[in-house]
Amino acid sequence: MNDSYLIKGGKPLKGEVILSGAKNVALKTIIASLMFKGDVILKNIPKINDVLDLIELIKSLGVKADFIEKNTLIINSDSLKSNRVELQYGSKIRVSFMLFAPLLHRYGECFVPNPGGCRIGARPIDRTINGLIALGVKVNYDSETGYYQAKIINKPKGKYRFEKPSHTGTELLMMIGLMTDEKVEIDNIANEPEIDDLILYLNSAGANIKEEKNKITISKNPELKQKKAFTIMSDRNELVTYATLAVASHGNIIIGPIKESLIASFLEIMRKAGAGVEKIAKDKFRFFYQDGIKPVNIETSPHPGFMTDWQPSWAILMLVAKGKSVIHERVFENRFSYVEELKKLGAKIDFIDIKVENPENFYHFNYEKNKEYQQTIKIQGGYELHNAILNIADLRAGAALACAALLASGETVVNGASILERGYEDFVEKIKKLGGDIKKV
Ligand code: EPU
Image (cartoon, rainbow, N blue to C red; front, side, top):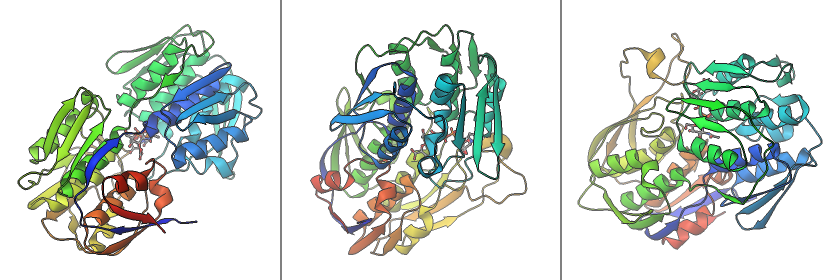
Protein backbone atom coordinates (compact mmCIF):
# COMPACT_ATOMS: atom_id res chain seq x y z
CA MET A 1 0.00 0.00 0.00
CA ASN A 2 1.32 3.47 -0.87
CA ASP A 3 1.23 5.21 2.50
CA SER A 4 3.63 8.13 2.00
CA TYR A 5 3.67 11.42 0.16
CA LEU A 6 6.63 12.59 -1.85
CA ILE A 7 6.46 16.37 -1.86
CA LYS A 8 8.65 18.90 -3.68
CA GLY A 9 8.04 22.15 -1.87
CA GLY A 10 8.61 25.80 -2.52
CA LYS A 11 5.81 26.71 -4.94
CA PRO A 12 3.10 29.27 -4.15
CA LEU A 13 -0.26 27.46 -4.18
CA LYS A 14 -2.97 29.12 -6.24
CA GLY A 15 -6.47 28.30 -7.34
CA GLU A 16 -9.74 27.23 -5.76
CA VAL A 17 -10.72 24.59 -3.20
CA ILE A 18 -14.26 23.30 -2.94
CA LEU A 19 -14.62 22.15 0.63
CA SER A 20 -15.77 18.60 1.36
CA GLY A 21 -18.43 17.75 3.91
CA ALA A 22 -17.44 17.94 7.59
CA LYS A 23 -15.93 14.71 8.92
CA ASN A 24 -17.25 15.44 12.39
CA VAL A 25 -20.81 15.73 11.10
CA ALA A 26 -20.64 12.88 8.58
CA LEU A 27 -19.63 10.34 11.24
CA LYS A 28 -22.39 11.34 13.65
CA THR A 29 -25.18 11.52 11.04
CA ILE A 30 -24.21 8.03 9.85
CA ILE A 31 -24.38 6.69 13.41
CA ALA A 32 -27.64 8.52 14.14
CA SER A 33 -29.14 7.05 10.95
CA LEU A 34 -29.13 3.67 12.67
CA MET A 35 -31.97 5.01 14.85
CA PHE A 36 -34.13 5.68 11.77
CA LYS A 37 -36.71 3.42 10.12
CA GLY A 38 -36.35 2.85 6.37
CA ASP A 39 -33.98 4.46 3.89
CA VAL A 40 -31.87 7.48 4.82
CA ILE A 41 -29.99 9.57 2.26
CA LEU A 42 -27.05 11.72 3.32
CA LYS A 43 -25.39 14.13 0.91
CA ASN A 44 -21.95 15.77 0.93
CA ILE A 45 -20.49 12.81 2.88
CA PRO A 46 -16.70 12.94 2.36
CA LYS A 47 -15.04 9.75 1.14
CA ILE A 48 -12.34 9.75 3.80
CA ASN A 49 -10.84 6.83 5.70
CA ASP A 50 -12.78 7.49 8.93
CA VAL A 51 -16.09 7.43 7.02
CA LEU A 52 -15.08 4.29 5.08
CA ASP A 53 -14.04 2.56 8.33
CA LEU A 54 -17.34 3.51 9.96
CA ILE A 55 -19.29 2.18 6.98
CA GLU A 56 -17.41 -1.11 7.27
CA LEU A 57 -18.25 -1.17 10.98
CA ILE A 58 -22.00 -0.65 10.49
CA LYS A 59 -22.05 -3.18 7.66
CA SER A 60 -20.52 -5.69 10.09
CA LEU A 61 -23.62 -5.10 12.23
CA GLY A 62 -25.91 -5.99 9.31
CA VAL A 63 -26.72 -2.42 8.19
CA LYS A 64 -26.94 -1.65 4.46
CA ALA A 65 -24.85 1.35 3.41
CA ASP A 66 -23.73 2.29 -0.09
CA PHE A 67 -22.54 5.34 -1.96
CA ILE A 68 -24.97 5.94 -4.82
CA GLU A 69 -23.00 8.95 -6.05
CA LYS A 70 -19.51 10.14 -5.07
CA ASN A 71 -20.70 11.83 -1.88
CA THR A 72 -24.26 10.55 -1.50
CA LEU A 73 -24.73 7.72 0.94
CA ILE A 74 -27.86 5.61 1.35
CA ILE A 75 -28.29 3.77 4.65
CA ASN A 76 -30.93 1.31 5.76
CA SER A 77 -30.62 -0.18 9.21
CA ASP A 78 -33.83 -2.23 9.22
CA SER A 79 -31.54 -5.27 8.78
CA LEU A 80 -29.38 -4.44 11.87
CA LYS A 81 -28.64 -7.82 13.45
CA SER A 82 -26.06 -7.41 16.20
CA ASN A 83 -25.69 -5.41 19.40
CA ARG A 84 -21.97 -5.99 19.69
CA VAL A 85 -19.29 -3.86 18.03
CA GLU A 86 -16.37 -6.18 17.22
CA LEU A 87 -12.96 -4.95 18.38
CA GLN A 88 -11.41 -5.24 14.89
CA TYR A 89 -13.83 -2.54 13.67
CA GLY A 90 -14.33 -0.52 16.86
CA SER A 91 -10.63 -0.11 17.56
CA LYS A 92 -10.08 1.61 14.19
CA ILE A 93 -12.28 4.57 14.82
CA ARG A 94 -12.84 6.74 17.86
CA VAL A 95 -16.54 7.50 17.35
CA SER A 96 -17.37 3.76 17.56
CA PHE A 97 -18.37 4.38 21.20
CA MET A 98 -21.24 6.53 19.89
CA LEU A 99 -22.84 3.29 18.69
CA PHE A 100 -24.13 3.03 22.29
CA ALA A 101 -27.07 5.17 21.18
CA PRO A 102 -28.51 3.23 18.20
CA LEU A 103 -27.70 -0.18 19.71
CA LEU A 104 -29.41 0.66 23.00
CA HIS A 105 -32.28 2.16 21.02
CA ARG A 106 -32.76 -1.07 19.10
CA TYR A 107 -31.79 -3.76 21.63
CA GLY A 108 -31.93 -2.19 25.11
CA GLU A 109 -28.47 -3.69 25.69
CA CYS A 110 -25.15 -3.49 23.86
CA PHE A 111 -21.43 -4.29 23.96
CA VAL A 112 -19.03 -1.62 22.75
CA PRO A 113 -15.20 -1.61 23.05
CA ASN A 114 -13.21 1.24 24.52
CA PRO A 115 -12.67 3.65 21.59
CA GLY A 116 -9.65 3.87 19.25
CA GLY A 117 -8.82 6.90 17.12
CA CYS A 118 -6.21 9.64 17.00
CA ARG A 119 -3.43 9.61 19.57
CA ILE A 120 -3.96 13.07 21.02
CA GLY A 121 -3.70 12.62 24.77
CA ALA A 122 -5.52 10.22 27.04
CA ARG A 123 -8.97 11.04 25.60
CA PRO A 124 -11.09 9.32 28.27
CA ILE A 125 -14.89 9.10 27.91
CA ASP A 126 -15.63 9.36 31.65
CA ARG A 127 -17.96 12.36 31.27
CA THR A 128 -20.06 10.53 28.71
CA ILE A 129 -20.23 7.35 30.76
CA ASN A 130 -21.25 9.38 33.85
CA GLY A 131 -23.94 10.99 31.69
CA LEU A 132 -25.29 7.64 30.53
CA ILE A 133 -25.47 6.47 34.14
CA ALA A 134 -27.16 9.72 35.27
CA LEU A 135 -29.86 9.21 32.64
CA GLY A 136 -30.53 5.72 33.98
CA VAL A 137 -28.43 3.49 31.71
CA LYS A 138 -26.60 0.70 33.53
CA VAL A 139 -22.96 0.60 32.39
CA ASN A 140 -20.25 -1.93 33.28
CA TYR A 141 -16.69 -1.95 32.05
CA ASP A 142 -14.72 -5.18 31.80
CA SER A 143 -11.05 -4.20 31.99
CA GLU A 144 -9.99 -7.67 30.82
CA THR A 145 -11.87 -7.57 27.54
CA GLY A 146 -11.84 -3.77 27.16
CA TYR A 147 -15.60 -3.81 26.58
CA TYR A 148 -18.42 -1.70 27.95
CA GLN A 149 -21.75 -3.40 28.53
CA ALA A 150 -24.66 -0.95 28.63
CA LYS A 151 -28.24 -1.82 29.49
CA ILE A 152 -31.48 0.12 29.65
CA ILE A 153 -33.35 -0.76 32.83
CA ASN A 154 -35.96 2.02 32.68
CA LYS A 155 -36.44 4.50 29.84
CA PRO A 156 -33.73 7.19 30.07
CA LYS A 157 -34.87 10.37 31.78
CA GLY A 158 -33.71 13.23 33.96
CA LYS A 159 -30.85 15.71 33.88
CA TYR A 160 -27.13 15.57 33.40
CA ARG A 161 -24.70 18.43 33.70
CA PHE A 162 -21.28 17.99 32.10
CA GLU A 163 -18.64 19.04 34.62
CA LYS A 164 -16.64 20.19 31.56
CA PRO A 165 -18.21 20.08 28.11
CA SER A 166 -17.57 17.29 25.61
CA HIS A 167 -18.40 17.53 21.91
CA THR A 168 -19.06 13.85 21.13
CA GLY A 169 -20.38 13.37 24.68
CA THR A 170 -23.05 16.02 24.06
CA GLU A 171 -24.03 14.32 20.80
CA LEU A 172 -24.20 10.85 22.30
CA LEU A 173 -26.33 11.86 25.29
CA MET A 174 -28.61 13.82 22.97
CA MET A 175 -29.18 10.65 20.94
CA ILE A 176 -29.86 8.70 24.14
CA GLY A 177 -32.55 11.29 24.90
CA LEU A 178 -34.23 10.32 21.63
CA MET A 179 -35.24 6.88 22.84
CA THR A 180 -37.75 8.02 25.42
CA ASP A 181 -40.94 10.03 25.82
CA GLU A 182 -39.63 11.34 29.12
CA LYS A 183 -37.88 14.69 29.28
CA VAL A 184 -34.09 14.63 29.14
CA GLU A 185 -31.99 17.71 29.90
CA ILE A 186 -28.28 18.03 29.22
CA ASP A 187 -26.51 21.01 30.67
CA ASN A 188 -23.10 22.66 30.16
CA ILE A 189 -23.00 21.20 26.65
CA ALA A 190 -20.38 21.79 23.98
CA ASN A 191 -21.35 24.47 21.45
CA GLU A 192 -19.56 23.29 18.33
CA PRO A 193 -21.48 24.07 15.11
CA GLU A 194 -21.14 20.42 14.06
CA ILE A 195 -23.53 19.57 16.93
CA ASP A 196 -26.06 22.08 15.53
CA ASP A 197 -25.93 20.33 12.17
CA LEU A 198 -26.64 16.97 13.83
CA ILE A 199 -29.61 18.54 15.66
CA LEU A 200 -30.88 19.93 12.36
CA TYR A 201 -30.65 16.47 10.84
CA LEU A 202 -32.47 14.74 13.71
CA ASN A 203 -35.18 17.41 14.01
CA SER A 204 -35.82 17.25 10.25
CA ALA A 205 -36.68 13.57 10.79
CA GLY A 206 -39.17 14.30 13.59
CA ALA A 207 -37.00 14.60 16.72
CA ASN A 208 -37.82 17.29 19.23
CA ILE A 209 -34.44 18.64 20.35
CA LYS A 210 -34.29 22.17 21.69
CA GLU A 211 -31.01 23.96 22.17
CA GLU A 212 -30.64 27.01 24.36
CA LYS A 213 -27.33 28.63 25.15
CA ASN A 214 -25.67 25.87 27.15
CA LYS A 215 -28.47 23.38 27.44
CA ILE A 216 -30.27 20.79 25.32
CA THR A 217 -33.76 19.53 26.11
CA ILE A 218 -35.22 16.48 24.39
CA SER A 219 -38.82 15.40 24.81
CA LYS A 220 -41.69 13.50 23.18
CA ASN A 221 -39.85 11.82 20.37
CA PRO A 222 -41.74 10.07 17.59
CA GLU A 223 -40.14 7.36 15.45
CA LEU A 224 -37.42 8.92 13.30
CA LYS A 225 -38.12 8.83 9.58
CA GLN A 226 -36.36 10.84 6.91
CA LYS A 227 -38.59 13.11 4.85
CA LYS A 228 -35.95 14.32 2.42
CA ALA A 229 -32.24 13.84 1.81
CA PHE A 230 -30.01 15.73 4.25
CA THR A 231 -26.91 17.64 3.13
CA ILE A 232 -24.25 18.03 5.79
CA MET A 233 -22.24 21.23 6.34
CA SER A 234 -18.76 21.92 4.93
CA ASP A 235 -15.60 21.08 6.82
CA ARG A 236 -14.27 24.20 8.55
CA ASN A 237 -11.09 22.35 9.59
CA GLU A 238 -10.32 21.67 5.95
CA LEU A 239 -10.77 25.37 5.22
CA VAL A 240 -8.21 26.34 7.85
CA THR A 241 -5.67 23.86 6.43
CA TYR A 242 -5.88 25.33 2.92
CA ALA A 243 -6.21 28.96 4.03
CA THR A 244 -3.03 28.89 6.12
CA LEU A 245 -1.25 27.03 3.31
CA ALA A 246 -2.33 29.70 0.80
CA VAL A 247 -0.74 32.46 2.86
CA ALA A 248 2.32 30.54 4.09
CA SER A 249 3.23 29.48 0.52
CA HIS A 250 2.92 33.11 -0.72
CA GLY A 251 -0.07 31.93 -2.73
CA ASN A 252 -3.69 32.80 -3.29
CA ILE A 253 -6.59 30.36 -2.78
CA ILE A 254 -10.37 30.83 -2.99
CA ILE A 255 -12.19 28.53 -0.56
CA GLY A 256 -15.87 27.74 -0.01
CA PRO A 257 -18.66 27.10 0.55
CA ILE A 258 -18.55 28.07 4.24
CA LYS A 259 -20.70 30.19 6.56
CA GLU A 260 -18.66 33.10 7.95
CA SER A 261 -19.90 32.55 11.52
CA LEU A 262 -18.24 29.10 11.58
CA ILE A 263 -14.77 30.54 11.05
CA ALA A 264 -15.11 34.02 12.59
CA SER A 265 -12.37 33.55 15.21
CA PHE A 266 -10.02 32.17 12.55
CA LEU A 267 -10.64 35.11 10.19
CA GLU A 268 -9.99 37.55 13.02
CA ILE A 269 -6.61 36.01 13.85
CA MET A 270 -5.65 35.75 10.17
CA ARG A 271 -6.30 39.47 9.72
CA LYS A 272 -4.32 40.21 12.88
CA ALA A 273 -1.38 38.32 11.36
CA GLY A 274 -1.60 40.51 8.26
CA ALA A 275 -2.80 37.70 5.99
CA GLY A 276 -4.89 38.68 2.98
CA VAL A 277 -8.53 37.74 3.64
CA GLU A 278 -11.30 38.80 1.31
CA LYS A 279 -14.93 37.73 1.31
CA ILE A 280 -15.74 37.33 -2.37
CA ALA A 281 -19.27 35.89 -2.10
CA LYS A 282 -21.78 35.05 0.66
CA ASP A 283 -19.99 31.78 1.42
CA LYS A 284 -16.60 32.11 -0.30
CA PHE A 285 -13.30 33.60 0.84
CA ARG A 286 -9.99 34.37 -0.82
CA PHE A 287 -6.86 33.93 1.28
CA PHE A 288 -3.58 35.37 0.01
CA TYR A 289 -0.12 36.48 1.01
CA GLN A 290 0.67 40.18 1.34
CA ASP A 291 3.55 42.27 2.79
CA GLY A 292 4.98 39.88 5.37
CA ILE A 293 3.23 37.91 8.09
CA LYS A 294 3.26 39.03 11.72
CA PRO A 295 3.54 36.61 14.65
CA VAL A 296 0.28 36.20 16.60
CA ASN A 297 -0.09 34.15 19.78
CA ILE A 298 -3.11 31.90 20.17
CA GLU A 299 -4.84 29.90 22.88
CA THR A 300 -7.16 27.15 21.73
CA SER A 301 -10.67 26.89 23.13
CA PRO A 302 -14.08 25.45 22.24
CA HIS A 303 -16.41 27.30 19.85
CA PRO A 304 -16.58 30.27 19.32
CA GLY A 305 -12.87 30.42 20.19
CA PHE A 306 -9.85 29.39 18.13
CA MET A 307 -10.37 25.66 17.67
CA THR A 308 -7.88 23.05 18.84
CA ASP A 309 -8.00 21.39 15.39
CA TRP A 310 -6.67 24.58 13.85
CA GLN A 311 -3.52 25.02 15.92
CA PRO A 312 -1.24 22.66 13.92
CA SER A 313 -2.09 24.69 10.78
CA TRP A 314 -1.48 27.91 12.70
CA ALA A 315 1.99 26.65 13.63
CA ILE A 316 2.75 26.26 9.90
CA LEU A 317 1.76 29.85 9.17
CA MET A 318 3.79 31.07 12.14
CA LEU A 319 6.89 29.38 10.68
CA VAL A 320 6.88 32.05 7.96
CA ALA A 321 6.04 34.96 10.29
CA LYS A 322 9.02 37.15 11.16
CA GLY A 323 9.38 36.84 14.94
CA LYS A 324 8.27 34.78 17.92
CA SER A 325 4.79 33.39 18.51
CA VAL A 326 3.26 31.16 21.16
CA ILE A 327 0.59 28.46 20.84
CA HIS A 328 -1.12 27.37 24.05
CA GLU A 329 -3.29 24.23 23.75
CA ARG A 330 -6.12 24.18 26.29
CA VAL A 331 -8.51 21.55 24.95
CA PHE A 332 -6.47 18.36 24.49
CA GLU A 333 -3.35 17.19 26.23
CA ASN A 334 -0.45 16.12 24.00
CA ARG A 335 -1.59 17.68 20.73
CA PHE A 336 1.89 18.65 19.57
CA SER A 337 3.06 15.44 17.90
CA TYR A 338 4.12 17.54 14.92
CA VAL A 339 6.77 19.54 16.82
CA GLU A 340 9.65 17.03 16.69
CA GLU A 341 8.84 16.36 13.02
CA LEU A 342 8.90 20.05 12.08
CA LYS A 343 12.30 20.37 13.74
CA LYS A 344 13.61 17.86 11.18
CA LEU A 345 12.80 20.47 8.52
CA GLY A 346 14.85 23.05 10.40
CA ALA A 347 11.92 24.71 12.20
CA LYS A 348 12.82 26.51 15.42
CA ILE A 349 10.19 25.39 17.93
CA ASP A 350 10.50 24.74 21.65
CA PHE A 351 8.17 23.63 24.40
CA ILE A 352 7.89 26.27 27.08
CA ASP A 353 6.26 26.42 30.52
CA ILE A 354 3.58 28.99 31.09
CA LYS A 355 2.22 29.49 34.59
CA VAL A 356 -1.55 29.07 34.68
CA GLU A 357 -3.57 30.33 37.65
CA ASN A 358 -6.12 27.57 38.01
CA PRO A 359 -5.13 24.74 35.63
CA GLU A 360 -8.04 22.48 36.68
CA ASN A 361 -10.44 25.07 35.27
CA PHE A 362 -8.26 26.49 32.54
CA TYR A 363 -7.70 23.21 30.71
CA HIS A 364 -10.60 21.31 29.19
CA PHE A 365 -9.06 17.88 29.77
CA ASN A 366 -9.02 16.27 33.22
CA TYR A 367 -5.96 18.04 34.63
CA GLU A 368 -3.94 16.02 37.15
CA LYS A 369 -1.76 17.89 39.63
CA ASN A 370 1.36 15.72 39.56
CA LYS A 371 1.39 14.91 35.89
CA GLU A 372 3.77 16.65 33.47
CA TYR A 373 2.13 18.38 30.55
CA GLN A 374 3.50 20.03 27.42
CA GLN A 375 0.77 22.44 26.47
CA THR A 376 2.70 25.39 25.04
CA ILE A 377 5.16 25.92 22.22
CA LYS A 378 7.18 28.90 21.09
CA ILE A 379 7.89 29.27 17.40
CA GLN A 380 10.70 31.39 16.01
CA GLY A 381 9.51 32.08 12.50
CA GLY A 382 11.16 33.48 9.41
CA TYR A 383 13.64 30.66 8.70
CA GLU A 384 13.81 28.64 5.47
CA LEU A 385 12.71 25.00 5.79
CA HIS A 386 14.65 22.17 4.15
CA ASN A 387 13.65 18.65 3.20
CA ALA A 388 13.49 15.64 5.58
CA ILE A 389 11.64 12.39 6.23
CA LEU A 390 8.58 12.98 8.41
CA ASN A 391 6.16 10.70 10.24
CA ILE A 392 2.49 11.48 10.87
CA ALA A 393 1.10 10.51 14.29
CA ASP A 394 -2.37 12.08 14.19
CA LEU A 395 -4.77 13.56 11.66
CA ARG A 396 -4.42 17.35 12.09
CA ALA A 397 -0.69 17.05 12.74
CA GLY A 398 -0.53 15.10 9.48
CA ALA A 399 -2.09 17.92 7.50
CA ALA A 400 0.34 20.38 9.11
CA LEU A 401 3.34 18.22 8.19
CA ALA A 402 2.25 17.81 4.56
CA CYS A 403 1.75 21.60 4.36
CA ALA A 404 5.17 22.23 5.91
CA ALA A 405 6.70 19.91 3.29
CA LEU A 406 5.00 22.04 0.61
CA LEU A 407 6.88 25.07 1.97
CA ALA A 408 10.27 23.35 2.31
CA SER A 409 12.99 23.26 -0.30
CA GLY A 410 13.87 19.91 -1.88
CA GLU A 411 12.01 16.60 -1.72
CA THR A 412 10.33 15.60 1.53
CA VAL A 413 8.84 12.22 2.34
CA VAL A 414 5.82 12.28 4.66
CA ASN A 415 4.95 8.82 6.02
CA GLY A 416 1.46 7.94 7.27
CA ALA A 417 -0.73 9.30 4.44
CA SER A 418 -3.62 7.07 5.52
CA ILE A 419 -3.78 8.95 8.87
CA LEU A 420 -4.13 12.31 7.08
CA GLU A 421 -6.68 10.74 4.75
CA ARG A 422 -8.84 9.79 7.72
CA GLY A 423 -10.06 13.37 7.51
CA TYR A 424 -9.07 14.99 4.19
CA GLU A 425 -10.86 14.03 1.00
CA ASP A 426 -8.85 14.01 -2.27
CA PHE A 427 -5.88 15.65 -0.56
CA VAL A 428 -3.41 14.81 -3.32
CA GLU A 429 -5.81 15.89 -6.09
CA LYS A 430 -6.67 19.16 -4.35
CA ILE A 431 -3.00 20.05 -3.75
CA LYS A 432 -2.07 19.18 -7.35
CA LYS A 433 -4.89 21.37 -8.65
CA LEU A 434 -3.38 24.25 -6.66
CA GLY A 435 -0.02 23.67 -8.39
CA GLY A 436 1.62 21.69 -5.58
CA ASP A 437 4.08 18.93 -6.43
CA ILE A 438 2.89 15.88 -4.50
CA LYS A 439 2.51 12.20 -5.21
CA LYS A 440 1.66 9.07 -3.27
CA VAL A 441 4.53 6.58 -2.98
N1 EPU B 1 -12.61 14.64 27.80
C1 EPU B 1 -12.49 13.91 28.97
N2 EPU B 1 -13.50 13.06 29.30
C2 EPU B 1 -14.60 12.88 28.51
C3 EPU B 1 -14.72 13.65 27.34
C4 EPU B 1 -13.69 14.52 27.00
O1 EPU B 1 -11.52 14.05 29.69
O2 EPU B 1 -15.47 12.08 28.87
C5 EPU B 1 -11.55 15.60 27.45
C6 EPU B 1 -10.85 15.25 26.14
O3 EPU B 1 -9.80 14.32 26.34
C7 EPU B 1 -10.38 16.61 25.67
C8 EPU B 1 -11.51 17.54 26.14
O4 EPU B 1 -12.15 16.87 27.20
O5 EPU B 1 -9.20 16.94 26.29
C9 EPU B 1 -12.54 17.89 25.07
O6 EPU B 1 -12.97 16.69 24.44
P1 EPU B 1 -14.29 16.53 23.60
O7 EPU B 1 -15.01 15.35 24.14
O8 EPU B 1 -15.01 17.81 23.48
O9 EPU B 1 -13.69 16.14 22.16
P2 EPU B 1 -14.16 14.93 21.29
O10 EPU B 1 -15.62 14.87 21.29
O11 EPU B 1 -13.39 13.71 21.62
C10 EPU B 1 -14.43 16.24 19.04
C11 EPU B 1 -13.90 16.10 17.65
C12 EPU B 1 -12.44 16.54 17.65
C13 EPU B 1 -12.37 17.99 18.07
C14 EPU B 1 -13.02 18.15 19.45
C15 EPU B 1 -13.14 19.60 19.86
C16 EPU B 1 -15.17 14.29 16.70
C17 EPU B 1 -15.17 12.88 16.23
N3 EPU B 1 -14.01 14.71 17.22
O12 EPU B 1 -13.63 15.38 19.86
O13 EPU B 1 -11.96 16.42 16.32
O14 EPU B 1 -11.03 18.39 18.14
O15 EPU B 1 -14.35 17.59 19.45
O16 EPU B 1 -14.05 20.24 19.06
O17 EPU B 1 -16.15 15.01 16.60
C18 EPU B 1 -10.43 15.83 14.64
O18 EPU B 1 -11.33 15.99 13.82
O19 EPU B 1 -9.22 15.60 14.30
C19 EPU B 1 -10.73 15.85 16.06
C20 EPU B 1 -9.89 15.42 16.98
